[in-house]
Every structure is written in structure tokens, then in C-alpha cells.
Length: 239
Image (cartoon, rainbow, N blue to C red; front, side, top):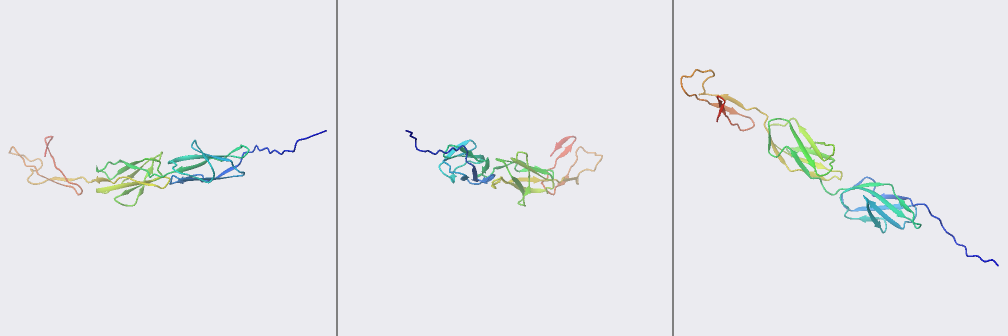
């Protein structure tokens, strides 16, 4: 006599699922701390594991919204396994979270500085990587500043400063579009040389005196600033 078992069918699956991330789109910059993740696979997925910058998060389903994602740049990897235990992995996705405007600090000139030149250089630093900076002088339209190599600072030189009092403010934005504003600073430019001349009753040049004293009188003026006069008498200053 011959006997046999019932027929059984088995399926061999050694192929990892193909995973395609639809959200976030590669290179996306989020200006909120909530990020939506979604993906597709060519077969049913039993478990999703999300890895961003080395942090693993097991997802119960997709799409999934993660809240309180900190500011920064992220490299996203999404793993998914099928019923046979094969793990699939998507291509690397990059995204950024940027919810904070940059702090803009004026390095130079110092507030309430005085200049005797028509050329003034402005320098600032930022608290994060900057995309653009502009300087507004006396409330006028922004002049684009030059970012440094690290893009955490900028400078601008104005070579045609007019005499008188000025104020300036610097605006900078980051890759997320957030705009930071510096404090308003004040400077004073006086590029004029004061006019000084002897006036009566000052004795004439090379005069021969028959007295043991002399009168000295001067007239001084400046179109921009107040003027103080000092007399140099035999290499000694007399106010």
C-alpha cells in the first residue's frame, strides 16, 4: 500500500520591496516644525521605519505627520519590509526645517561713530547661514551686501557718503525666507577741513614788536561740525 500527504504550496520571496518617497520632496525647506511623510511600494508593507539623521521612528502607517521636528538639515531614509521579511530602502532624500529668523549683529561701524572720510565700510554677522543681506542707509532702498565664504556674515562699502548725520539698518534672510533685522545705528560724517584764519587785532606776520605781549585772534568755521580753536605759541598749546 502507498500513502502520501496532502499537497502544500510554498512561495519563495527573496526580493526586497521597491520604495518611492513622495513626501517630503527632495530639497524641500519647511518653515514649520510639522513634516508630512508619505511613500509608495510595489507590494504590501508590514512595517515602516523612518530614519532621519540617525534617528529611527517606527511608523504604524503612511502618510504620517511628525510634529516638533527641530530646525536643521535632514537626510531621510525610509525602510519597509514585506510579509517575507525582506527590507526595502528608498533613495536618500534631503529636506530642511527652518522656523527661526536669523539674528543680525552689526560688527562695524560702532553706534555713534564719527568719520572724516566719505568712504565707510559696514560689516555684520548672522546667527545662521544667510541667503541675502541688504543695507538701508537713511531709510533708502536696500543695497545688496557681499556675503562671506561661510555665508554667516556680510559687508558693504559706501564710497560716497555725504557730510552729516546718518542712520542705517541691515536686513538678512535665510533659505526659509525668514528675515532678520539689525538694530538701527547712527554715524556722523565730516569730510570738510575747517577754515581758520587770523583776524584783527592779531599782529601781522613777521611784525617787529616793541612790547612784551601780543594779541592773537582767530576766526574758525566748518560747514558741517562745530569748531574748537587752539593756538600753538612756541610749541605750546594755548586755548
